Structures are given as C-alpha cells and as structure tokens.
Amino acid sequence: MFKTVAKNKRLLMWTIFLMCMVQMPHLALSSGIDVIHRQVFTDKSLATIQTVIAMQNLLRMFTGILSAILISAQVASKKNLTVIGISMIAVTGIIATIFHTQFWELVMFSVLIGLGIGFLITGSQSMILDNFDEKERQLISGFQFSFINLGGILMSVIGGLLITVIWYGGYLMLLLMIPIAVLAVIVLPQDHSHRSVKQPVEKKRSRVRLPNVVYYYSFTLFFFMLIFNVTASNLSTHLETNSLGNAGTAGAVIATMMAGGVLAGLIYGKLASKLHDMMIPVSFFLVFAGFTMLNIFHGNLTMIFIAVFISGMAISFCLPQCIVSASNSINPTNSALASTLLASVAPGLGGFLSPVLFTNLTLALGGASTAFRFQFVGIVSLVSGIAYIFIIYRRGKMPQTSPVGESLCNR
Image (tube, rainbow, N blue to C red; front, top):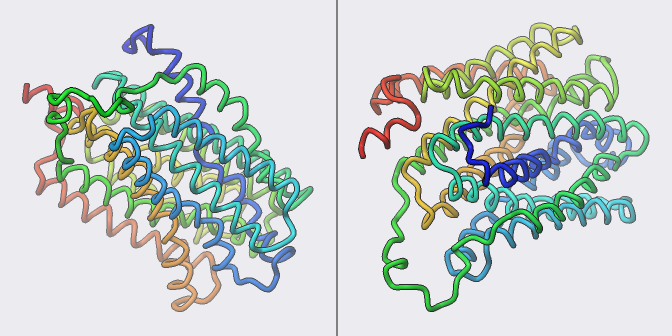
C-alpha cells in the first residue's frame, strides 16, 4: 500500500499520521456544547458557547501566520514549532483537570488549543510538502485525512462518553498529546529553514512568491469549512431538541461523521485520479445531501447516522484535493507560508466564522430550529457546488491530467 513511499521516509510518514490523529481536538468538545449551554454556563447563549469552542479555529490562523514568519526568518524550525504546538495542547488537558468552574477558563482552553493547533498543523503539513515527492504526496494526502478523521472518531466517542460523566471530560482527551510529543521529538527531522544568518546567497535568491493558485485553493477551503463546520457545531443541540440522546449519543454521531471521512480518505486517491478538481463540487453536493437528510429525518436517529456519514465524506475529498492541487506550485522556500494558508488560515477562519454567520443568520430567518439551519446551509452548499463546476470549467481544470500530472507535463 505504501510502496511508493521510500523506506527511509516511512517512520516519518507514520509519525505525521499519528500527529494527524490529534489535529481535531474540538470534536472531543463539540459533543458537550449542549451540556455546557444547558447545565454549566446557563447564562450564556448557544451562539456564544459555539463561538468560544470554535474560537480555536480563529487563533490557529494567527499562530499559523506567526509560524510562517518565524520559519521564514529562520528563528525557529518546523520541527520545534510542531513539538511546541503538540505540547501546548497537552498542557491544556492538564490545566482543565484543575481549572473548570469559570467561563473565562473555557475561553482560555480555546486560546491554548488554537495556538497549539496552529503550530502543529503548519509544521507537520509543511514537512509533508518538503520531504515527499509528488506521487508520495498524493498517496499520503488521502491517508492523512483518514487518520485525521480516525482521530476525530476517538475524540468524539471517548470525549462524548467522558462528558456524560463530567462536563469537561472532552478536554481530558488532550492528554493523548503527551506521548505523541515525545515521538515527534525523536523522529521529526530538523528542516533546512532553521539555519544561520550566513545562509548562502543563492539559497536566499531561490525563494519565490506564492502563486495565485494557492490563494484560490485557500479560499475554497475557507468557504467549504464555513459550510461544513455547521455539522459538528449543531449536532448535539439537534439531537437534544429531538429527544434523541445525550452527549454520548452526540459523540457517537460525530464519530460516524468522521468514519465517513476515514472511508473517503481511503478511496480519495483512486477517485481523484479520475475526477481531479471535480472532487471539490462533489464535496459540496455530499454536504447538501447530508444536511437535507438531517432536516427531513430529524426525528430518526438511524437516518441521522447515515446523513452525517455522507456529509463526513466531503471533508476528506475537498481538503486533500485542494492541498494536492496547490502543492504542485510550491517549493521548500515557500511551503511554510503555503501550509499556513491551506492548513491553518483558510480552514481556521472558516471554522470560526461558521457559527457566527450561520447560527445567527438562521436564528433570524427560521428561529432556533436546527432542522431549518441544516437545510438552509445545505442549499447554500448545493449552489456552491454548482458554481464550482462552472469555475472549474472556466479554469480549464476538467479531468484531463492527474493532480500530480500537471507539473510533470510542464517539465
């Protein structure tokens, strides 16, 4: 399965996969949104709770930018920033066991997680771009998101169960970061970005600006996450409203959503070799199908499981496709900045603004109904998918060359 990856890179690959498994800690917390709203901080609105939990997405954007600046200025290496990021998230789990009675502490948890995730994602994603060739990246990108979603499953299920016992149980899942941080210290290579000021002149001159295509795919990821994040932010409330279970049930449903992402990641490579950038509108259509089912079958738990599985597949189609397509125009001199935009800024900003925009907008248009919210955003996703078909046609990105083949053909 991994024969295309050189043997001397496989330990690094598996280490990155393990780090991928802890890149979505917010899923361990999403199951408890309704509990936090109704039982802990009852004086706060649902939108406020959702926004605080999602705030980590905004903060990881700023940390990602800071990472790119530090790496570019050769102040820190990608390895060191990655280890720092993992450690910050682990520390959050430790602090949560002691401080968990005040609302400001909830805000503090999101700040620490957001800062840590920004360092972790930017560093690890940049290492993939730097250390693996085109064919290796195409294989690894699909499995990368399978491991991200597999980790999301563990976070959701175990986090949801812990929340049924104690409301801050989801934060205890962050302690899993400790052994992974140790492994990262041992395995991750020191990159070439962290060098002395006496770096050869020719190396400095080799640095190139980011191509416009990176900004295009970054915007696509931002817009997709703006829509997709509605799922996790509203599932616990959706289930509670329809009397379909507790935080444990919400954790299982979110885990099913991530299972869809695992499956999609495993089959991504074969589909992408035929559909290429058409994977992007397919992702929007999957979200539309899932959200429509959440509306129509809002009182049927079985159908809800099926609906989130379908919508969950979308994230492992859209994200790797955007990263693989953009990576063909990236080199080690600008990979840190590109990784920041693609893996931190775009999805982070989209995830943060999702509840700010859609929760408040649908509250104004259709009241507190989560069924209406899902259907409204689902229609937005459908229209977006259709729009992207026309955009892809216009950009000449229809299936004619492979995602890695475009750069090969230009050699």
